[in-house]
Length: 368
Ligand SMILES: *Cc1c(COP(=O)(O)O)cnc(C)c1O
Image (cartoon, rainbow, N blue to C red; front, side, top):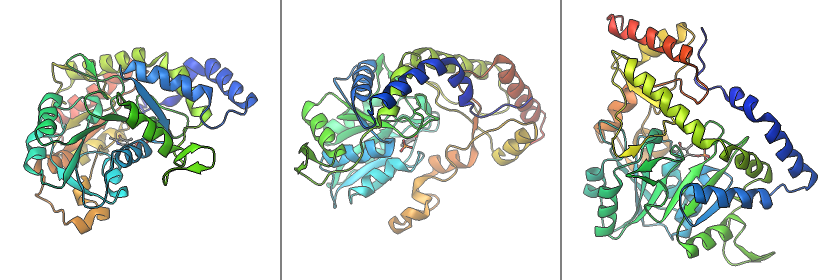
């Protein structure tokens, strides 16, 4: 049996007619950039996460950048970021000319370690970006308290955490802003690039709206140096359709994860916190012989992924900051041992069983 890591076609089959109708509308109305589809999506996406405002942009990376820019992050500032994340979390800080301060993660859940954040705070630290990695919220109470105590702005990178919850509250509203990605493989995926910033702060939302559209207050009147970070009408239309399904898809992800949790043996399972609603963007296990396990699974036609094999502080792009192996040991161990198993809403029970049987046979029988 061939088990793909992700198969977007299965989802498309279920919604093709609705998507086609929406795309036709956009074409017929030449509503290619922003427009009513984007506005409708923004309103519904804000509601979904119980925030007041949503500003659609053209990627998760843009969402993070435009947020830090609107918050006034500038050269000389420091922003705390975890190193086990997609590198764009750190890019946003660098784009503003500020310095990312690299923090470690917790052993059990791979989410940001509050103590690591607090230890590295200096008088230059202005903000903390938490990443709700793999779809599970960070320790928001502790991190929120740290931010309050040190007067830091809290930004949530929610790129992997659509509809995730911490103590019954959806992510994105814990700090000043929540940044989302709609990269096609994310829990809510566009058919191209897309992103959004959610906030409860009206003046921040206004600033972000202006910055995404060339800093214009009205056409050809530019108040500040802005960006072209506008969301496409086509992506707004696609995302609006998909919003009708996201809750169901999320439940299917959680069910698939539960099946893995109950049946897998011989690998370290991902920690799931009882006070969080984990939305399982990824199901990441650990094994000391990760590369061999991945190789053997690929021989059985099971595709896996690595999230992420090289922590941000060890990336060549950040060599000038002097990061080295040993600096952030928990993140480094995760990077060495992590393996992401196939998981998407349409993954079948047979496919899950096949993955489980193979892993249990390999890891359990000392073949690794
Ligand atoms: C995907 C992702 C991003 C970047 O989003 P893009 O839409 O690809 O620019 C940022 N942070 C995290 C944690 C992500 O997973």
